[in-house]
Length: 187
Image (tube, rainbow, N blue to C red; front, side, top):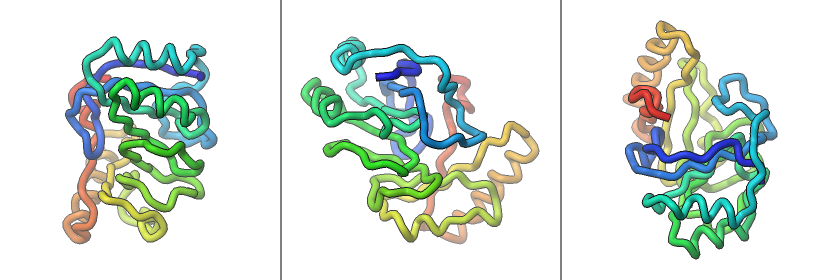
């Protein structure tokens, strides 16, 4: 598998914010979103057994598989091996490709034309008034989150955050997801 990086940190977004996790960031994505925080050029090849071995050297038994989009590489055999080693598996995906069975928590931040119809957590990047949230009508989820888009411009980010909070207050189906790892200055 093409692995962009592995690291220990706190989950910074969504349902498991603040949870110690082992991150497995895979390289490669079928989309080219301009705000993506992954450099897809660099990677190292790792076998599934090497991935499980490296993850197992650490205490958190919560693994977040992200990318790019992990659906491009994630296999049923890796999911099974991680479960056999006692891991809770969380996947963050754009939803445009199917995933293996048995993933414990699927967070979908939909982009493009999603094929997933049901996920655990739907996390929509909110750019302010005018953001199309109709995707929530097409994908059912246990939890619905709006995450203010980080534009890299502090003034614009404050306006987007204000608009996000205002929208959530008027539409309580949604809750706020912040990129707390950025606020805390951690990876």
